Length: 395
Image (cartoon, rainbow, N blue to C red; front, side, top):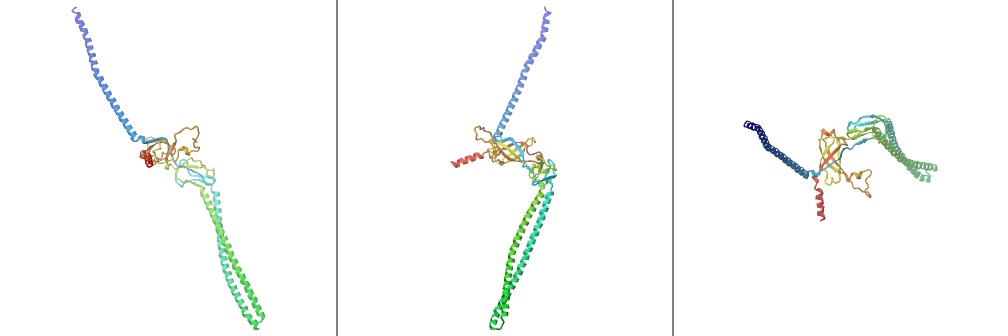
């Protein structure tokens, strides 16, 4: 009995030690778990505070800025492209430009076969020369006629003198014949001479009158020659213009696009040959909803996000608003005066000037899609103030 008791006591000691160790471990785990929960609560509290601060900041930003920003993605870059077409008809002889080539204003683009226009110009120049010769001849004839008038006038003066002298002779010899101092034959001769002198005088007067009237005819002929010269010169200028128009030039700087012209094809006046796109003069047209343009005015600041340039915001200003919605200028405007009316929010085109830095200018092309943000704070209170002023005036 005494030998067994120590053995039992010895066997229980390890169990007691093991129990004591687990108990100690359980007691130490409680403070550690409590510390983890405390730190978690602190982190959640801090995260909640940051979220509240972010929400408050966002709300403040929306209240002061965001609610005045009008945004649309219905916007595209545009340029006033020019369609190049000839003024005269002819076969294309040369094409001086290639696809997408940069060109300057006044640069030759296409040359038409100009042989027939050169011939017409030469013919017109020859006609001008002939008409100038007609004018010179008419002027010479008029000058000659002036000399003829002077000669006829001189002969008329001589005839008058002769007529006066012959009449005087008749008057002097008449009394002498009556007294018998002179014969009747002498008086008859003098009377005959006086009659001939009077006839010569009348003939000279008729010659002067005829020469004077001939001057009027020559003057009319000279005026006609001048008119024909004017017509010939106008025809020559037209021929020169036609010859000049066989070389088609660009009226603005830009880049060649949509080139359809080829050497050898026959081009009629107005036939589209190619398009010149002034990529250096781009502007933006944004189509805002009618509910967004109430506070939109010219001069407001704009931020532009181009899809082709992510992360490169551009800036600009509102230039003008369209005088009507897009549907007003459509080819087939909507007719809402029907029984099947459905209200649709209309769009108002807004033209925007974009400031384009040199580093991105080459990447901006007409037709690119953009997103536009317009800051309407500058004139946000204008309609309300105007309405209140109008009410005060009516009151």
